[in-house]
Length: 339
Ligand SMILES: Nc1ncnc2c1ncn2[C@@H]1O[C@H](COP(=O)(O)OP(=O)(O)OP(=O)(O)O)[C@@H](O)[C@H]1O
Image 1 (cartoon, helix red, strand yellow):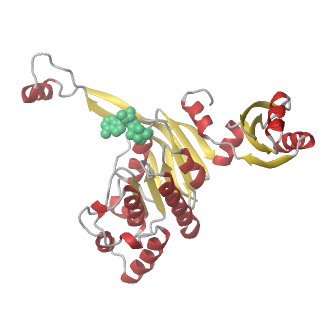
Image 2 (cartoon, rainbow, N blue to C red):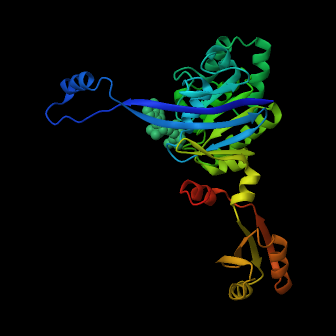
Image 3 (cartoon, protein in one colour):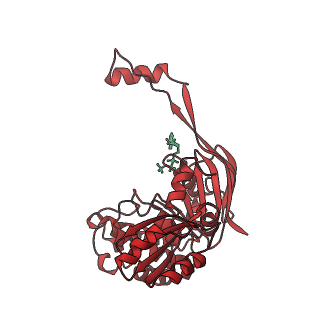
């Protein structure tokens, strides 16, 4: 059975139209606008009739260009926003109707906001959350030990949150979101602004949390490496509408036709020679010294065929078959070039 069910969900924001007055400014202008524009609204359809399900233990990447409606969906799933129409259920609860119980079901991490107490040492923030969520002392000790271990929090437990670096704070936020052991974790751009080493630590921790603890993860991000390294499933929305919902493997298979084999030759002469007599199935190549990258369409030939073609003619130092990156295809999808 699905842990999350979203059915024909829509969200329309109503915003006041604001006209610029040439004659007035400041408080007078604001007052005039308040009086004259009362009742004049513009409707923004942020989410338009989307449906999907997420099973327990899934890791789902939630993608879309800026303004696509991702945060709006996450806020509805978190119970912060009420849908305009359609229905949604998380672990048997309707988020906005049963906010208290729903809060026990979910952990939420917004990369750009903090839920921790700024001036308190981190361990005091966790102690407060223990009281708020009514976690028993034994459960709290076990969970804390586990989270401190996975997220490497030991050296920062005594530090006030305001003194933490962004990477340390995000690791602390993830721990805070999971302290009450919810089955679902929503993460909205958790790696924004982080350096590559910190990103990798956070990705490894999230993988471990999913595999060891079975936490279901819904992750929105603009960093496609997050998706490639954490998620098995992918949902892509654009202008509030669903444009892809399926496995990451299927996404690669269906849309990422170009694959690449990288070969290293013994000498530059051989590398240059290959450049002049490419196997016919190779669409294009890039050369960097003795390393040559051969791009091919996997629907027309296989890695084995290209590799044997090259190895029959040359002595190779190394050969690497790479997973296709989804970055190029996702950009094409955003531009409407593939559907
Ligand atoms: N509180 C709000 N009031 C009015 N319009 C809003 C509000 N929040 C979001 N919107 C609009 O709804 C649309 C979807 O915004 P949303 O923040 O959900 O997109 P997003 O996919 O999360 O974008 P990003 O990747 O840039 O964070 C946008 O057009 C945005 O301007």
